[in-house]
Amino acid sequence: MQEKGLLIVLSGPSGVGKGTVRKELFSQPDTAFEYSVSATTRLPREGERNGVDYFFKTREEFEGMIREDQLLEYAEFVGNYYGTPVEYVRETLDAGKDVFLEIEVQGASQVRKKFPEGLFIFLAPPSLSELESRIVTRGTETEDIIRGRMKAAREELEMMELYDYVVENDQVERAAARVKSIVVAEHCRRERVQHRYKKMLEVE
Ligand SMILES: Nc1ncnc2c1ncn2[C@@H]1O[C@H](COP(=O)(O)OP(=O)(O)OP(=O)(O)O)[C@@H](O)[C@H]1O
Ligand SMILES: Nc1nc2c(ncn2[C@@H]2O[C@H](COP(=O)(O)O)[C@@H](O)[C@H]2O)c(=O)[nH]1
Image (tube, rainbow, N blue to C red; front, side, top):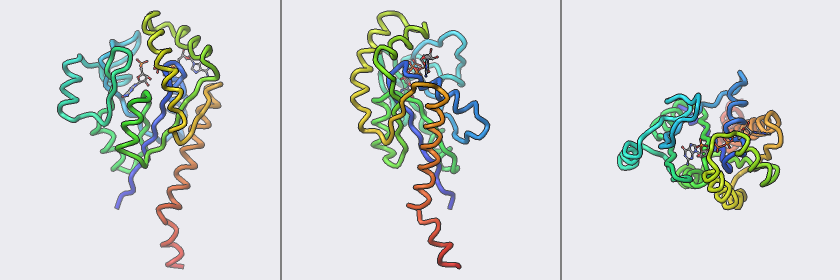
C-alpha cells in the first residue's frame, strides 16, 4: 500500500515572513513538498495570480465552498475568509507526496484536530516591533488593517506553545534551512515509528 505523505503546516502571525520563507524553500531544487494554494475573499495584490497565489473568490462563492464541505479548514482573518481546499490535500497525501500549508493560527488549530499526525511549525518574529516594521514595509495593507493584524498577532504568539516546533525568522535562508531540517528529521522519526525496518530484520 502507498504510504501517505506528510502534512506540513507553517503558521505564525501576519508579516512574520511565512510567504517569504515558503518561496525560499520552493526555490530550492531539492524541495519535494507540494504547495496547497488557498482560497480567499481578499482582493488580489499587485502581481498576485489566481490559482497561483490564491484562488480568489467572492464571499458568496467562498460560503458555497463552506456549505459544500470543500475546505479542510477556514478562518475569517481581519475581514476576509481564507481556507484550504480539501480535495487537493487529500489526493496529494494519498499519492505519497508531502503537502505544505501556509496558513494563519485559527486554521492551523482546525487542521491539528483533523490531522493530528501533521507537522506543525510556528514561525516567530525576532520582536513585535520587527513584526510591525515588516508589515508596514511590505506596503500592502492600510493602517487600519495593519492595526488589526498586529492585534491578532499578540493573540497568535500566545499559541506558539501548541506547535511541534518554533522557528525564529531572523534571517530568511536560515529560517528556511531550519524548516527543511525539521521535515527531514520528522521523516526519519516516522520511518522508525512505522517499523519499516522490522521487515528487513525479519528477512535477514
Ligand atoms: N527574515 C526577514 N528579515 C527581514 N524582512 C523579512 C524577513 N522575512 C520576511 N521579510 C519581509 O517581511 C515582509 C512580510 O513577509 P511575508 O509577506 O512573507 O509575511 P507573511 O507572514 O507571509 O505575511 P502574511 O501572513 O500577511 O501573508 C515582506 O516585506 C518580507 O520581504
Ligand atoms: N486559515 C487560513 N489562513 C490562511 C490561508 N491562506 C493564507 N492564510 C493566512 O491568512 C493571513 C493573511 O494572508 P494575506 O495573504 O492576506 O496576507 C496570513 O497569515 C496567511 O498565512 C488558508 O487557507 N487558511
